[in-house]
Amino acid sequence: MALVPVKIVPAIIAFLVTMLFWVVLAPPQGVDINAWRLLGIFIGTIVAIIGKALPIGGAAIIGILVVGVTQVTNPGNPGKAMGDALSGFSNTLIWLIGIAFFISRGFIKTGLGARIAYYFVRLFGKHTLGISYGLTFAEVVLAPVMPSNTARGGGVLFPINRSISESMSSHPSEDSRLKIGAFLTLVAYQVNIITSAMFVTATAPNPLITAGILDVAKINVSWAQWALSACVPGILSLLLIPLFLYFVFPPQIKSTPNAAELANQKLAEMGSIKLAEWIMIFVFFLLLFIWAGGPSLISDSPYFDIDPTAGAFIGLGVLLFSGVLTWDDLLKEKGAWDTVTWFSSLVMMATFLNKLGVIAWFAQYIQNLATHLGFGWLEASLFLVLVYFFIHYFFASTTAHISALFASFLAVGVGMGAPPLMLGLLLGFASSLCASLTHYGTGSAPILFGSGYVTMGEWWKWGLVVGILNLIIWGVSGAVWWKILGYW
Image (cartoon, rainbow, N blue to C red):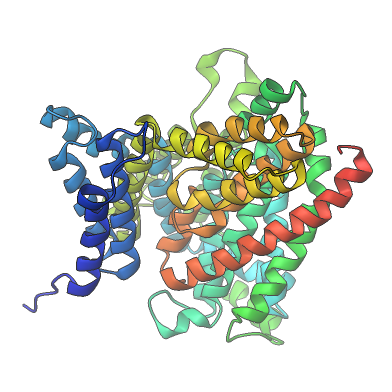
C-alpha cells in the first residue's frame, strides 16, 4: 500500500505561521496570551488547508488536536480543553449541513433530481447562462420565506444544481467538472449570498442586524423597509454576477440548442413519477414547510416551533424509514462526513476567538485607528465597511460575525457623524455579502464547495473578485437609491 504523507513545504509554512504567534509576536495589550496563541493555530490551520498540507479534513483534525493538547481554551484543565476542541461537533448548523448532503443523495438516487433537472433544461436549457438564471429565480422565490441560507442553498437547490450538472455528464473531481458543474456551483453560491442580503427573513442572523440598528440608532427597520432598501442593488447583483462569472469562469458547454428536445426524450424514458420520487417530493415540501416557519403559524405554543436542524433530521428520518435511503447510502456520502469534520474545527476556533476577546480587541483597535486618522463620516464609513467585510476571513459563521462586530462598528460610524440608517443597512448587507470570500463563509459554502466541482483556489479567487464587485454594486447603486429614499 502506497503511503500518502503530509506535504512537507506547506506543512512547514503552516507550522512557522503558527509559531509566530507563540514565540515571536507578543500579544497586544488587552489580549490574553492563550487567545493570541489560538489565533495562531487558527491562521496556521487555514494556511495548511490552503497549501493542501493534508486533505482538508486531515488538516482540520490536526487543528482540533493542537487546540486540545495545548489547552489554549482552558489552561490547566485537559479534559475541558479537549471538550472545547470537540465542541464544534455539537453545533446544530454543522449537522444541518451534513444532512443536506444526505438529502441531496436521495434526489439523485431516486432520479427525482434528474427529473427536475430535465424540467429546468426544457424550460431554460437553450443556453447554460439561462439555466443559471433559472436557479437564480428559484433562489429569489424561496429566500423571503426560508430563513436559512444553508437549508435553501444546500438542502433545496444544491441537489437540483448537482443533478443538472450530472445530467450533462459534468462530474466533480474530473476534467468534466468544467463542462457546466463548476460554473453552476459558483453561481449558485454567490446568488445564495446575494439573496441572503435582500430580505430580513432570508438568513437567520439578519434580525440581529435590525436589533443592532434599533439599539444603536433607535431606528426600527421593518421587513418591508429592508426589502425596499435592498431591491435595487440586489436585483443589479443578481443580474450582473451570473453574467460576470459566465465570462470570467466560463462553462465549456455554453449552447445547448437540442437540450429541450433531449430533455423531453429523457423525461419520456423516465416515465411517470415513481413511489420513491413521491416520497422525496413529500420530504421536499415538508422541509420547505418547516424551514419557512410553518409549524409556528399553526400555534403560538413554543412546542410547535421546530429547529431547522431538527426539521432536517425529520426529513432524513422519513427517507430512512421508507427505505428511500439506507444507512449504507449515508456512509458512502464522503462529502458529508468530510465537511462536518473540517467545518466543526473552524467553527470551534472562530467561536473561542470571540469568547476569549480577540474579536473585541480588534474592533476597539479599528475604532481607535479611525479616530486617529481624522476621518470624516464618509471616509470613516467606507473604512469601517471594508474592514468589516474582509475580517470575515476569520469567521466561519455570519451569526458570529454580526454578534461580535456589528453593533460596535455601527456605533463607531454613527459617533463620527455617519447617517445611522444608511450605515446600518450597508453594514447589514455586507454581513451576508462578505460570506462570498471563503469556502467556510456561511453554512451553504461547505455544502457547495464539498461537492468537488470548484477547487479551493478557484473558490477563493472568484469569491474575492465577486465580493469586491458586490461591494461596488451595493455601495454605488445603494447610495443613489438610499439618497432617493431619504436615508442620508
